[in-house]
Image (tube, one colour):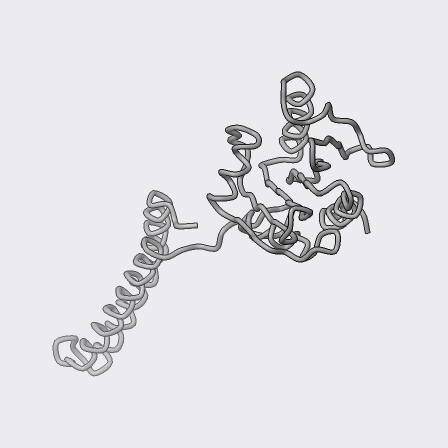
Length: 228
């Protein structure tokens, strides 16, 4: 995350104020060195040392200002996932296999956000997304994971999906809760079974061929930390 310019200016001002006593101390030391041989004018070497110390301190302050104005700070860490970048956190959770099928394709960043947006419409709460495809045949599976700003936003997003498929005409059957998994919803279209749920700051949706849908759901729940 790049340092905000206003913040950098304020930090620079604080740096200068904090450096003022040090500058005064350096000047005092320089004068003491200069006077050690008698009169201040009679000791040019002392004056040179004082000048060098003063210039070095000023350069140090200038260097700190340049760092603040042009450098970068470490991004704040997500308190739920422990990762600074939402997409990075999602990658850590991503299963390498799903229903016995290997990861074949992965979309991240803006591409993944657009794919999730086509599914859920414009949602300003989404902060990151990944879309993973498993297997190379029509029997493969696809996993969508989106991160949002809060656990309540994740639940709201899940509930909106249930409401949309219940009240609107879609290719999906009316969703139902998976027996034994109160927070997991299921639906289906002509070819695939679909499961979706909210977990912490994330929303998960997995689509799989009906022949291996149960295994795909089990692997997804493990990756989300809902099952062990």
